[in-house]
Image (cartoon, rainbow, N blue to C red; front, top):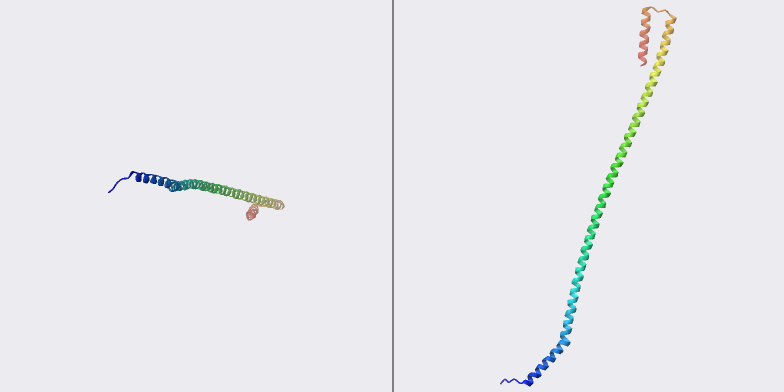
Amino acid sequence: MLTIEIGTMLFQLIAFIILMLLVSKFALRPMLQVMKQRQDHIEGQIKEAEERRKEAEKLLEEQRQELKKARQEAKEIIERAKAQKDREAEAIIKQAQERAGRILEEATNEIQREKEKALASLRDEVGGLSVQLASKLLEKELDKNRHSDLVSSYLDEVGRLQ
């Protein structure tokens, strides 16, 4: 039947302990070391991925800031261009108004000169006619009818000159 032998049991126990030590030294430790290395490698990759993600987020934020800055600069450039356009338009309008004012003033002065010339010419004509009338009166003694005919013809002649 079954009997327990202490010698065999001790031998088996010692053999088991030796086998466990050998397995521990040659199999378990290298396997644990490989598992530790694998765990470290995975943790390193996770850490590296997290750092890359943070760096990507940082770069994305920087790009957003740059884009925002570029949009602001573009807006400022557009505003400056609009302001410059308005200033130039005002300057052009002002120049045109000044030129129109000068042309109008020159035309007014020209009209005034022509009017003065016409009046001077008319005065000369009236003076000449007056001299002619006086000389005719001195040459002849006029009666009332002849005098009124002479004045009427003088007035007609002055009216034609105007």
